[in-house]
Amino acid sequence: MSGTSAAAVASCLALDANAECRRIEEGIRDIVVRRLHRRGAIVGVSGGVDSAVCLALSTRALGAERVLALLMPERESSDSSSRLGEAAARSVGAPFLVEDLTAALAGIACYDRRDRAIRNVFPDYGPGWKNKIVLGGGQDGQFHHFRLVVRDPFGVEHTARLPHREYLEIVAAQNFKQRLRKATEYHHADRLNYAVVGTPNLLEYDQGFFVKNGDGSADLKPIAHLYKTQVYALARHLGLPEEICTSSPTTDTYTLAQGQDEFFFGLPYPQMDLALWSLDRGDSPEVLAARLGLGSVEAAHIYEAIVAKRQAVRYLQSPPLGLRYAP
Amino acid sequence: MDIKARVRTFILEDLLMVALPTDLADDASLRKLSILDSTGVLELVAFLEQAFGIQVKDGELLPGNLDSVDAIVSYVREKLGFQVAEPQA
Image (cartoon, rainbow over all chains, first blue to last red; front, side, top):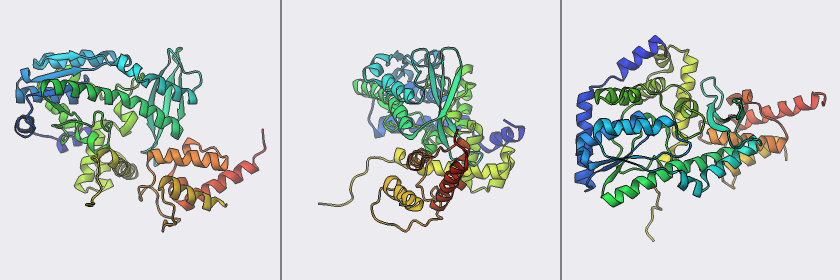
């Protein structure tokens, strides 16, 4: 990140971490205890900063004994996910359970369905290969489009633009991961009479970076009003492990390492935060360009991409819709 | 059916899923009308490649080529003309 950009992010998105934590903790108590009448909270922890902050705030709000952290790895999770998830739980004194979802995902053919679709693009894809989807276009005025990247067992990467049908097949298969995690969270919520905490931040919620009825589903979303930059600030204030406070956001969904910026946002999160903040304030592309140290044309493309994504994600954010008439 | 009619039919029936003619202007931005998002672009490309036998290159995924009926028609005409003029391998 350029000096211009880093300074702008720091000044524009600064917050009083202590006061914000207190507000959120009171909000969690109000929702879980008084409005939902649950006895505690379930937090699925991924090893990332959002879930770690939600876990820390939930334990401060309700008491560690009334929170259960769930670690839900599967055979394609990165090695660091469970390690960091466990470190987060231990650092706040929350009890935790490990639920390995590999057998469930294999049983529902998550991996097989995805691999079949990948072989339509790369026929040699098989055991020993890895995959991810990355976002192409965007900043340079191109339409955003999705590209499939695979790495063969010899370490050679191959990439191709994803055809429409295969893109949908791969994403639909991968979404089983988030949906089975959520089903597992609700299983434990039901047996303990707890509420489920959703962990999206403002950037993810606004731009639709979640799976409907997967990680997008929850009883409360205590950090959905905070930019990612601000979530990191709370993580440091809450004293979470250093590795969590400094980690780059990943999807931990595909078998190749995949940053959230390359799959979804197209820009690193500090710049995305700043772009979203600037757009919502009504600042011109020229103002954003100055903040990010970019050209105004490029800044205008970033605004266009944000607006386009907002239109595309209405489906994800929509609750079930009934028909508005009386028979 | 000519190129414009086929493109309009695809946009109306497949992207918008309306059977009746609408007031979609030929120069209207499909992005600004929320007709074309990142998934819709893939769908449009699949249609163009299948319907007209062209190959859409990554560098051609530009609003100037795909963001309106007029733009798409010009782009397809250019691609078809280019391909006809090229000697076959």
